[in-house]
Amino acid sequence: MYYKTAYELAVILIAGILHTALLKKVLDTFLNAEDRNRLIWKTVFMGYYLLSTAAFTAFHVSLPYALCNLVGIIGAACFYRAAWEKKIWISMFYFCMDTGSGVAAAAAVSEARMQLTAVCTLLLMICVTVICHIPDPEEGREIALDKRQMFLLYLIPVLSVAVFFVMLYGNAGRGMTVLLCAAVMALNLCVFYLYHILLQNYVQLREQDIYKQQTTAYQNQLEVIMESQGRIRALRHDMQNHMLALGGLAKGSEPDKLTEYLDSMQEFMKNPSEHVYTGNEALDSLLNFKLQRAQEELKKVETDIVLPEKMKLHSFDFNVIVGNLLDNAVAASRQTEEQFLKFVMRMEHGVLFLYMVNSCSGIPEGVCEIRKLTEKSVAGHGIGLANVRRIVEKYHGDMEMRCMDNHMETDIMLYMKNL
Image 1 (cartoon, rainbow, N blue to C red):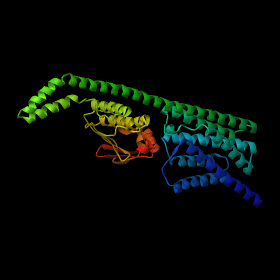
Image 2 (image 1 turned 180 degrees about the horizontal axis):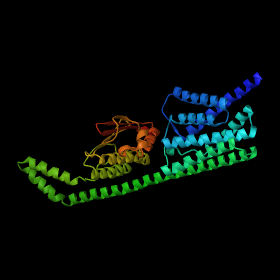
Image 3 (image 1 turned 45 degrees about the vertical axis):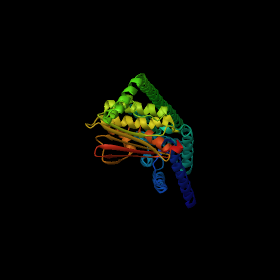
């Protein structure tokens, strides 16, 4: 009797390790891990292992075990970086699969704890293998759908768990219980696949929107170039007269008038719509388009852009970074009385520095957590910041946002050798 109990306990402990590994597999596949040290991660999953194993040993497949298991799953998901809606949805979905596997196993093998544990783990492993073959796109891991869609996604696993416990405590036969559990779990897998398709479509629509912005920016840049060429043609047409006037002023005794005339020529050549000219069409078109819109909507816009002509820059990724940052900054600054924006870009020793300051309101002082800005979208900030951070991390760069005296400061550093 003693050896049998010890053997069953050993099976439960080993199955608990597999359960924990399966949970980590699912969370790693569909959520982004926070930048924490390995000790914290070991502590998190060790805590889940101890909680779930102790609860299963004490209560088997039952409501108390399910509640402990749910608390442990959500607790582990909290240490991942994503919108809260996404973390709760993944936690509920995994919990539904785990509960369904347990109820089906309980109906199939009755009270034999050793067989119950083994069958439950095997069923859960099959479910995890299936869902991990349809992972979210990397750029969509931090996306949460709108509230109505997320409510429907929450509702399905919640109702499924309710059905599982009705079957567990009801009078349905074993065969019917196993069949219904399999059907409900298959339904949840289908819903999960549909969620994956929705997410892919969302990412594609977002990319199409970015390409549309690029097309609009190129069109704006073409108008800027045509206006600049028109000014050059006008100056060239009157160049003979200008040369005569300059010659006369040079022979005179009033050099200030000569300087004034040259300044007026230089001022005539300036195109107010051309804020930057680097020779990089993608970069110039985007910056001129965004900064021109900023000048139209805000009271004060300052720019300081010094970039080399030949830059190996991926236009799509650059559009994501600069486009999202400027859109958010203008939206936030427009809600303030000051309506101020300063945008600085410089290239030094193969490193691209981007510094931006804009007036804002309603944001706490200090360093801002991009995840919180992304989730709450406070005062216009947060829209698309997850995409910006993803691109910055893609190129092993650094990004920091901080609020001081109702001004949001953004610092980004990108290593051009990776671009």
